[in-house]
Length: 163
Image (cartoon, rainbow, N blue to C red):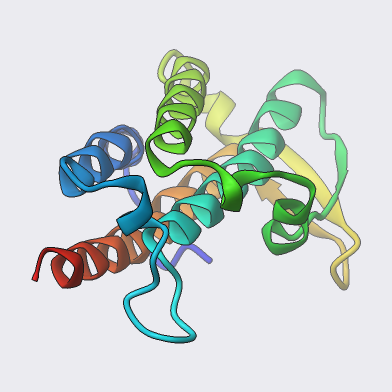
């Protein structure tokens, strides 16, 4: 969950920075390396990226629904459940990163031109306990702040791979 309020500019900057940061971190590494966990029971870089894509799918879809409809009711979807409907964990890392990059470009194309009031558009989220009211800003911030530790996780994995 987002812990502190970020400005719109900070959110857009963080969201835009994730794909090129991952590309720079993993440049020159083979797909087989990126599919190898650094230790038993840990995620590989590819599994981390698959999780990031799943979160971006779910929360990005919420943003799009909130913007397309007036105060929609959205059934909560857990990204861990959603990923089971995809082949993200099996995709080659660099192909998956290209898809993540395109997905992020598409999201930023939606978010960048928003007027300030649009960031406050709301939806009611059901299916995960009592109904919650969430905004475009909430989901954008949740996505941006959720990705930070995962980027650091990939950084640690890559450091291990590079020795």
